[in-house]
Length: 299
Image (cartoon, rainbow, N blue to C red):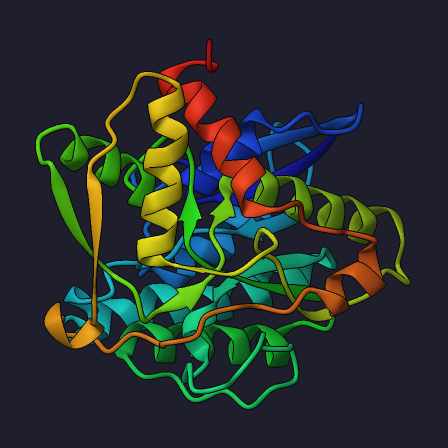
């Protein structure tokens, strides 16, 4: 049996990785804040070294993160501990164990001022503490272990946890009109689809020492804005008997937040398609699957 350690087990991605159908001979061991303190680097190193059920881990997928973007502006020590020092500890532990590390990162490492999709080699310049701390994690992993893959993603959603889809459905059930930011652009990402991509990468890294390493992007395909995303949520929800309020587009300036957000978070997929043959499906199709789970299949 090959055991894969997955952090962030209670989150959207960790849940999806646990539900994913892995190849025969693979088993996911999830970890969350209750059993592993990500601010304790010694505990991280010990956890990786301990393995599971008397066997060493075959790989680690670090999907855990401090994701409270606005709170991080005032809680930067914790954000950096979880998002940068913890990946450094995982990298050191994986290198010592001679196993690969898959590190999940974010579109927030980019400044958002580019026309078109961000590619993996584009210059990074985060706008907020969260993005800077995640970039710190990337640097720690790159310098900490040669057998690593960093996967940047964006706008993660699913039928579990807290996310934009569930917020829109909840708020939309009580209001005839919702104001949603229309000048921030990107692509939603199904946690299920992201988990499948990460599993493909992890298995390849375990089974082939010549598997591609480095930095890649994964999100679902196609571009939209938060307002456009909301409109499609309600269009598809209405087909399932769900709420369908009107969406009022507003500017970012009309909805100020403590942390600045990138205006363009669209991620290019050419690197992950070329290296791993992973071709993301359209975000609208991924949304449909999530709404099937939340509201049921359209009549």
